[in-house]
Image (cartoon, rainbow, N blue to C red):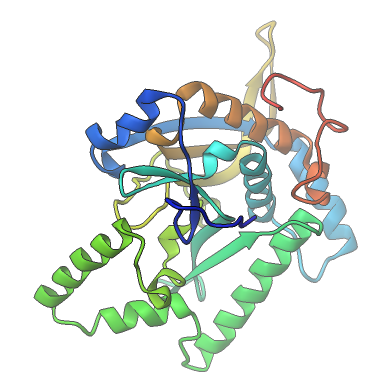
Length: 304
């Protein structure tokens, strides 16, 4: 997705020149990222996803597909079709990110004293989207857990954090201030930028994997991440019909914390509607990232 650099662009994104004066002015008057958190909560019917996963796992029982793989693929498709969701603010300017990327943390094993590692993945075009996400996650998780069992620290992000942790506290605070300045001016050393987990489009927490639910997680001012998603546990819940009756279905709630400077509420709402429709038609995710979706979903005003 990278394009040729022009003056004013960054190494990791293309500058967005908005025709809306408010969009240009907002980064100067509205403080940092954590001062601009917009919180969206939604609960979706996951019946179609459950049936979709059953069919896929019947064909592939050894390396199973999970709800998490589908959610990440659906987010990637949504962001591809709604590109303002992939904007970040740096140096009081808006930039369109070159890639659609995700970051999350995982434990080496389900135990209180187990270590955590950070995983960063990029959704690429050219192949089956959900299969690509599944394979990348399974490969990296297996590799990291295998290295952990050997006592090795194979994850580059964890290695970099271990290096910074050796720096005395007063010095480290100064170093972080310097790094923030370097990021503001787009001169961050590549060795640090390339392993920074918070450069991702979406930082996602898979709370469902530990049987928890929450509605909110804060953003952070460090780096470039504009969206934090909480994917809660799936369970049976009532879904009401127009006549007041209801049906018990597999449902899942999500919490979206978004830097409101990247778009307006109307754009966020249409993006959420698209995400909901993709989850209702998960066969979309068996296509490439760039493939159109109008053969699955009736064309609506959010699909351009």
